[in-house]
Image 1 (cartoon, one colour):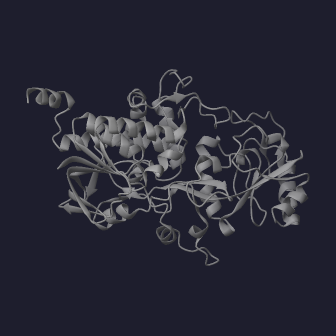
Image 2 (cartoon, rainbow, N blue to C red):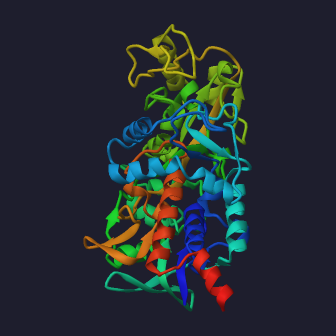
Amino acid sequence: MTDVLVIGGGNAALCAALMAREAGASVLLLEGSPREWRGGNSQHTRNLRCMHDAPQDVLVEAYPEEEFWQDLLKVTGGRTNEELARLVIRASSTCRPWMVRHGVRFQPSLSGALHTARTNAFFMGGGKALVNAYYRSAEALGVQVRYDSPVQRLELRDGAFVAAWSGGTRIEAKTCVLAAGGFESNREWLREAWGVDEHGVSPADNFLIRGTRYNTGELLRFMLDAGAEPIGDATQAHMVAIDARAPLYDGGICTRIDCVSLGVVVNREARRFYDEGEDFWPKRYAIWGRLVARQPGQIAYSIIDAKAVGRFMPPVFPGVRAESLPALAHALQLDEATFMQTVSAYNTACRPGSFDHTRLDDCRTEGLDPPKTHWARPLDTPPFFGYAVRPGVTFTYLGLKTDRQARVQFGGRASRNLFVAGEMMAGNVLGQGYTAGVGMSIGTAFGRIAGEQAAAAAGATGFAQREAEHAVA
């Protein structure tokens, strides 16, 4: 019998598998995707948000615990478990040496990468390189890996794990770690969560899935139906405004539109609907998918002029270009009169200031609803550009309630041998909102905790003792 069964194949699952194996447990990892698509949403990531009290190799200055906590508190609007959030924050300060031992390499923040040089450590080669490094290390340590092995259900007894079913195969283990992601690729579940709008349309029908196509939430649904305590809201997610031309699945980071704070955003009625300059982009970029999801047709248009060019990470697709604002409205198929009225009102409301996109500057609007509180400059310099955007769902926040030991909860009682990590429990920390890199912080922290706890619950003896036993034998 396997000591630890890990269900999932992304960052959290791999951290759990590595930690359990280091503790001496035998480990089997089941990845639902084919090998070429392994890694879940982690293959699309690029950095980890890290607490640090002084400069560290690729991180500048300091990013102390309290500032990290306040950033998280602000973006979640208080919908977070402080105990578990601070556990993640503190763990983020000590995990990188362990990651390096398993082959992960870091590089400084890229130019134009959302002002993250102080807060986020970037993976050299991105998330795919991180995932590949972990798989290489896991296989070298003797972790068994099976691809194309989604798990549909578990056998449970009084809240304890007995076995898992993958297709027609029954797999027993002493303990189990659930790290199989959310339900963002389950269109029916998204429709169920979002319902219909005032026009009788399901907003979810217009969502693009920025992450993996393999996160269907089948195991999450099973666990909730089996009585595991839920956490989070089914409509809350890491949901980003991405290029409307992006593929249905696996668009990743390159489809994100990062120029929102440098111009204005209008809906298909050519009207603004939110403050584009509310805060720094790393703290607010992930609210825009949800904002667009609430607009007619779940589409919006990010509008900039020539002054913004070169100040944001360019997306994979070029914007629609025009030499005049009326021509841009025509090219985007927006009502010209309304569009010009919207832009004119914005331009008139802009107040002179010292523009500086690296800080909360004093360029703002006055007498405009909604306002633009920072980085407000008139759109008056051709050429003009427009990007059609739609909601891009990375991962959902509805998940399983857990504790400091990453244990799954049933009716207020913690399971003795069933643990959870990653997106399946992220809602404990992320009730809403997002800040760049925190998903990887959560997955790394709880993946490592879950793996260590699962190995202990399985009675693993540790590498040193096992090596000694083998030598005697």
